[in-house]
Image 1 (tube, rainbow, N blue to C red):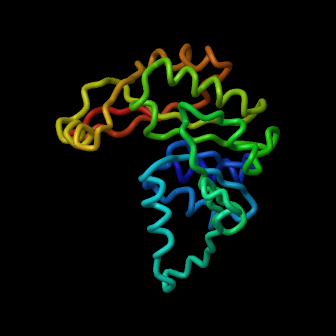
Image 2 (image 1 turned 180 degrees about the horizontal axis):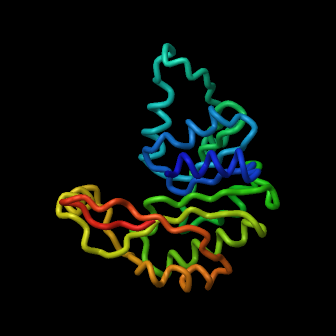
Length: 208
C-alpha cells in the first residue's frame, strides 16, 4: 500500500519530495529513490537501527545490479547521501527541529511533498504526537499529503506484544477510527482516505 501511494503521488500528483519519518529497517526509501531519480527522498531516523541499515546497504552484493553510491556529506556523518536524491538523516523526531534538519539537507518548502509516518505513532504518547504533527504541518503547503498509521486499539496480539517488550518498544497510543477526522483537523489536516489491514485469525485489527 505504501509503495503504491508513493508511486501514485509521484507519477500522478506531482510529488517532488518524499519525507519518511522513522524508516526503521524498511528499504522503501532506497527502492523509491532508485525508481524515481528526479524525486528527493528524505529518511529521518536515529541510533543503531539507522546505522545497521546503512551498514547493510554498504555490503549489498554488486550482482544485484542496484548501482548506487553512498556519500558522507563532508564531516557531517549525520547525513548520508545515496546517489543524488536519497538523504538518510540522523534525527530525533521528538527533540530535533524537523524544519531545520530538513532544510539543512535541501528540503524546499513549497515543493510538492508527501510525508510518511508508518508504524510510528503507537510508540509515542499523545503529547509527543501533537508536537510531531504540529511540526509536520509547518513543513507543508496546501495540497501536500501525509500518510499516518495508527493502532485502532491497544489489544495487540500476544506474539507482537512479546516482540515489542523484548525490543523495549512499548505501545502508548491508539485512535478510534471514528475520531480520526477530529484528531487531524486540530492540526489543519483533513482525511482524504482511510485504509485498514485485513483481519486475520491471531492478529489484531490495526488501522492505517
